[in-house]
Image 1 (cartoon, one colour):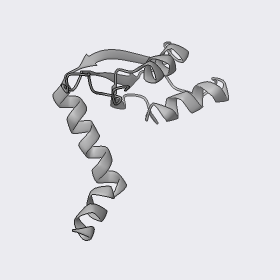
Image 2: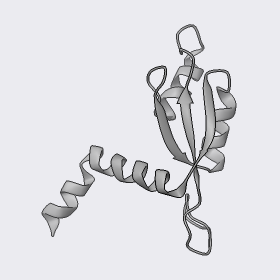
Image 3: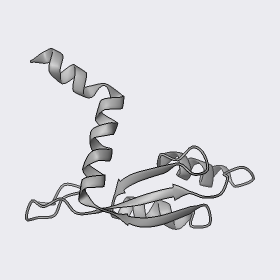
Image 4: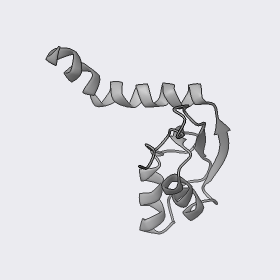
Length: 98
């Protein structure tokens, strides 16, 4: 059975990648702008912590001239994952069901 994205087979959470937009998407192809959007980047200087998986690495490889990438700790990855759930409202739905 395959492991979940963002976890190793032994249950430990693997570190992620902190992706920061350093150049504008204006003047780039629509495909590049869509890739920036998929990485969760909307403006210069904005960062997003993403899991270190093939899909994310492929998106980064498409726009290396627009972003910088540094390793992020597992704690950063967990905090970013928690913030995404909080923004989407899923955590509130879970509390209401209980």
